[in-house]
Amino acid sequence: MQNDSTNNRPRHVAIIMDGNGRWAKAHGLPRIEGHRRGAQAVQRSLEAARDLGLQYLTLYAFSVENWNRPKEEVQALMELLDQFLKDQLKHMLKHKIRLRVLGRYHELPKHIQDRLRDTEARTADFTDFTVGLALNYGSRTEVVDAARAIAKAAQAGTLDPDNLDYAQFRDFLYTGDMPDPDLVIRTSGESRLSNFLLLQSAYSEIHFSQVLWPDFDRASFEAALDDYAQRERRYGKTSEQLQPPES
Image (cartoon, helix red, strand yellow):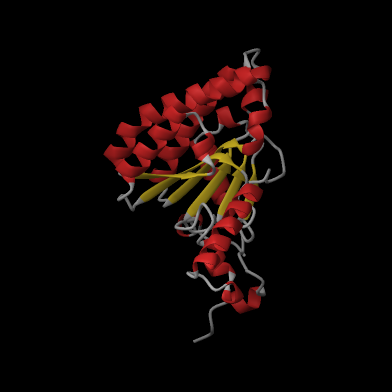
């Protein structure tokens, strides 16, 4: 079933930003230069998402597994993150963009924790557009943290585990106050979710782009949204059940 792409926009798009290292290698540049160009692609995507009427954009910036990369690369990534947040704060305040940090960011360097908390606090009241930044994030880790929080709530008597359903469970996830993503985009031609929003993406449409992340631009973004617009989201129902009743 085809749809008018301008009338079938997702509310929430999540992106697995992949391909910085391969982009750098293809251009004969060090890996950190690929990450720098990747930061520019983040800026383009933020602007495109706002212009195209999205309400939520979640970016997979640093996974719990990324600590296993060479120490020099991890340090460079933290420096890039710190500079990106510093540069973006004025832009977020001007355009009323809310920042939501997803993941165990209390394990990041303290100066980055402080900058993240400050940015979250100063943008907390904005409601038109939210950017979720997944940092030190892993979906399995998220489930463990949610289970721990639920156990504590049950011990405190504020939650009855016998009546627990998924609607309540999701409130304990990092994304508890955000809707599930309608569309998940992964760049660089890889076809896996890599421990990203696994529960939240249970019914998400997935678009695998061949474009390496540093080359991801507005045209790439719009191609993913056009692909999404052609999908029929059934949530377990049949196509016939989704058809409006005849008048």
